[in-house]
Image 1 (cartoon, rainbow, N blue to C red):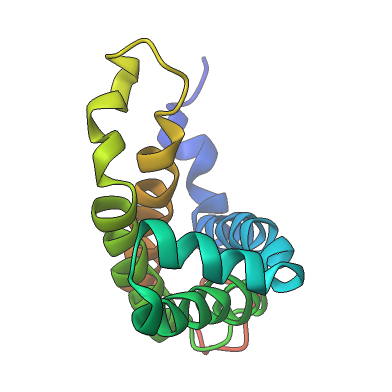
Image 2: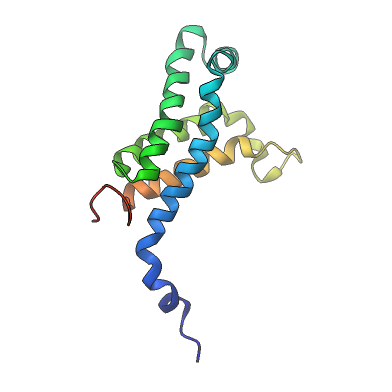
Length: 145
């Protein structure tokens, strides 16, 4: 007789938050690392489309910190709850403020291929919120709960 799936996966449950924070951190880093090498262009794009010129500096440098420094914190398991809460708040803002115009493209309702503009930041925000609630899991610098 095959045991229930819950009994099969239960021994691996403590490792799930680690996997989630590694993947979320790697995706954030992959998303943010190229921006480090194109800061002037990124400043221009943000200044033209999201925040006017004096406000584009905090937006750009906040983005660079969140997508690079806090991503490394997640990967290493250092200050996970605090980092994840900040990432979640930042990416909810990104999803609704910066990419809120593509909200109608969610589920590809307009048959375009740009639904990722809203869905990617929203998914990162939800993943980070889960990590904020759950903590680092195994293999991190933060002590296990």
